[in-house]
Length: 84
Image 1 (cartoon, rainbow, N blue to C red):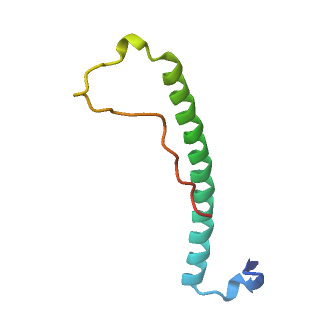
Image 2 (cartoon, rainbow, N blue to C red):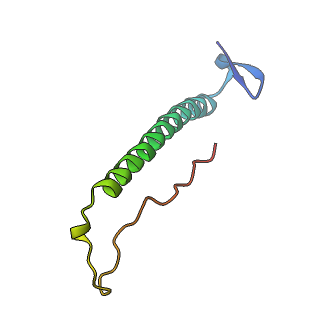
């Protein structure tokens, strides 16, 4: 079976076990990265949804007027995009 890496085809039967293992690891990690990227996008959507819900539904009667209370959370902060 031929494997293409960086535009070159390699005969898998001629690769040592370390190279074969590295190929498996790269494939596994690429799959994991795609999964994590999808999860990251889903988390951003959920953060936006819950932040919008809070903005629309927090009662004015729950606002604390005292200046001694430190804020716990504000609207969602920008999330850094993963590097490709």
